[in-house]
Image (cartoon, rainbow, N blue to C red; front, side, top):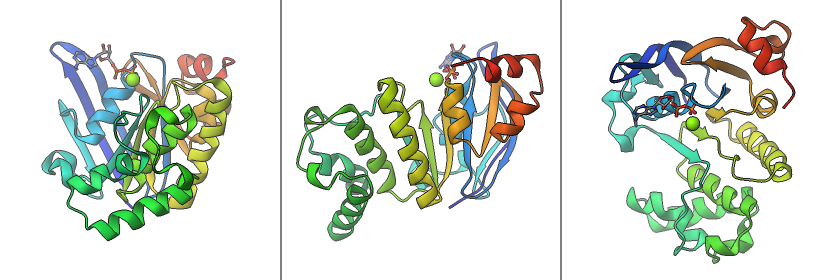
Length: 238
Ligand code: ADP
Ligand code: MG
């Protein structure tokens, strides 16, 4: 488990400012949703937390350590993307085990962790299948499983449900929330969907063109929007 802090984060690509001064201290076990329209900088912000993108200025710390001082393997985070990025030729078991094998985890330990994640995700009966033999929801669960087996301190999600149909999106949203509650892992979750944000977040960061217009609990933001943009974005029907 870990706290995450973002201090005066800025990011420019060339002369274009993409993120301007985001500040937040995230508590251990908190579920933070970064929400805003397409192009407002959500993915860039998440990628800076992952250390996949350098910060132009400011600092990202995970568990008190500066992210950019850590080697990728030592970052202790796991990321789930919208396109799952599963290996089509590997079984579900091997997809979930892959990262652990690379990290040199002992075989017994790998089997134990994959089995335990499979139970949690109701994938026990699918471990020998390949991704193409699974439904969209099951594939998304495998992607979650791959993150869980690594026992990270922080989960990062980038629009993990946006490829699913509306009904499945609602179901998986609930599953992700329950899972996060159960595991208590600090989570940052990116979405452009206001309802998803309201449902999942302990606190949400409402992004508007690279600026965090408001940070707060969903009902607080809903009841007291800090800017006209937030009022329009959170108040408008999905
Ligand atoms: P979101 O995830 O909210 O849709 P992004 O973080 O992907 O937004 O992008 C924010 C802005 O930064 C966009 O205008 C995008 O074009 C720009 N951007 C993202 N990555 C790069 C990059 N590697 N080089 C140049 N511009 C980028
Ligand atoms: Mg994005």
